[in-house]
Length: 433
Ligand SMILES: *[C@@H]1O[C@H](CO)[C@@H](O)[C@H](O)[C@H]1NC(C)=O
Ligand SMILES: *[C@@H]1O[C@H](CO)[C@@H](O)[C@H](O)[C@H]1NC(C)=O
Ligand SMILES: *[C@@H]1O[C@H](CO)[C@@H](O)[C@H](O)[C@H]1NC(C)=O
Ligand SMILES: *[C@@H]1O[C@H](CO)[C@@H](O)[C@H](O)[C@H]1NC(C)=O
Ligand SMILES: *[C@@H]1O[C@H](CO)[C@@H](O)[C@H](O)[C@H]1NC(C)=O
Ligand SMILES: *[C@@H]1O[C@H](CO)[C@@H](O)[C@H](O)[C@H]1NC(C)=O
Ligand SMILES: *[C@@H]1O[C@H](CO)[C@@H](O)[C@H](O)[C@H]1NC(C)=O
Ligand SMILES: *[C@@H]1O[C@H](CO)[C@@H](O)[C@H](O)[C@H]1NC(C)=O
Image (tube, rainbow, N blue to C red; front, side, top):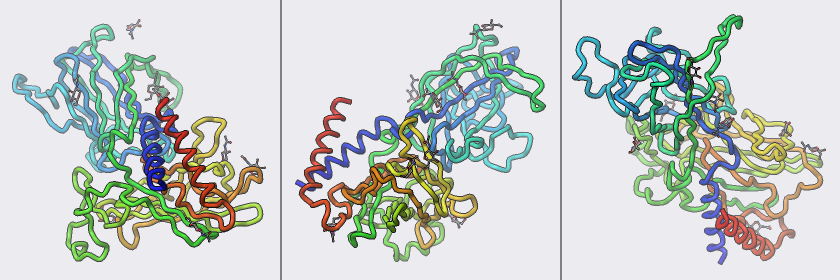
């Protein structure tokens, strides 16, 4: 029974979360095209990719943007990005376009390209930080010159069927929509100019589209009970168990074993949970007016240094965070009246890179929270987080009936019936949804 309830609970939890992101409901990536000039056979546009997601960044190896031309457009040239294939330009003589494909695929340039190929906010290898982490840096731009296209706002046809890989699947993009033209201020701020025409495309993320299984899990412990509640077993799927590596395996000494694959296939240390990332939440100390939590993140992937990582956590007491050690912290306020979510991220040059699996593959922080006397309790797992996201993907929590108990308080039977009740409510909710 306990098992069934737990499985039900985690299934429901995971499937609800995949519909949209409840902790960042307005998070999206916006792709904006500003037509800067009309040319004899087309136009020059500046394309801006803004990441408006609070805690989900585009990590290495970066974004890939694609679309379908509405007519017979070609790309004469690009600055600050390139298409991955030129396509068939055989009908051109003399001036050869940069790309003649009907569905061009564009990627960012790598850092350090010659100055004349750069554009503002370009050339970061397609990496875009999360909005909550670096609002000024959460942007990528390039310039594109298009031929065989409309040459006025009456004849231009908007590109269709936008696709965004960031870097894997997960994003769905809506249609391009003409919006009021962007205005620009000159650098001395004394003159305003305006794009000739602007259209926007909005892309949103769904973890369900990105992957079958979670990619992280959470374990718990507390000072008041010596039980350590581990990650649920097979939290991230067990089908790859043959591909995992034991931590003392000789393979790990081979040269190149840490080299990332193009498709980012992980090389995971064999564990019961089989997750590349584990987050551990330890309720460490209880003071009169405060309590203290220790958070540790462990990387079990031998082929990944997680740079620019983020950890988003939902817990009712995050409205009263007093101090955070070793990590940066920022409250995330998804619904203005509820302030129960925050994001943690690494300090630059100190622990913003979560090293590949091994002795340095973890980062730790302590959080001091002020108790709200009305709601604070160690009973019924209250001290543990409600949701945890690593790099914008929801982590699997242990089933509620395995949380460390406060001795002599919540008795097992009560908690189990509470669990059954909440699961039933959640199932109902998900049916209604
Ligand atoms: C995209 O995100 C921005 C910033 O959060 C928000 O203002 C805008 O409404 C969002 N757009 C859509 C279509 O959700
Ligand atoms: C279009 O995208 C830009 C960001 O690239 C955003 O500032 C603007 O609000 C968007 N316009 C609309 C109407 O969504
Ligand atoms: C097209 O440009 C004309 C002026 O050149 C302007 O009056 C009109 O509103 C524009 N139409 C659109 C759809 O932007
Ligand atoms: C949109 O693009 C995707 C991927 O490039 C492709 O599979 C799909 O057929 C396209 N749809 C249309 C209507 O062009
Ligand atoms: C991670 O970073 C270290 C130090 O910069 C480097 O030696 C190692 O090769 C990197 N590992 C991967 C998987 O990129
Ligand atoms: C949310 O809580 C944080 C402390 O964790 C506080 O600094 C912030 O002002 C709160 N925001 C709102 C809107 O209440
Ligand atoms: C933080 O806790 C104190 C003490 O319980 C309380 O007075 C205050 O209102 C709390 N702050 C917030 C933002 O809830
Ligand atoms: C600690 O919590 C576990 C549940 O995870 C429970 O079975 C055990 O009885 C608790 N220990 C004490 C001393 O209460």
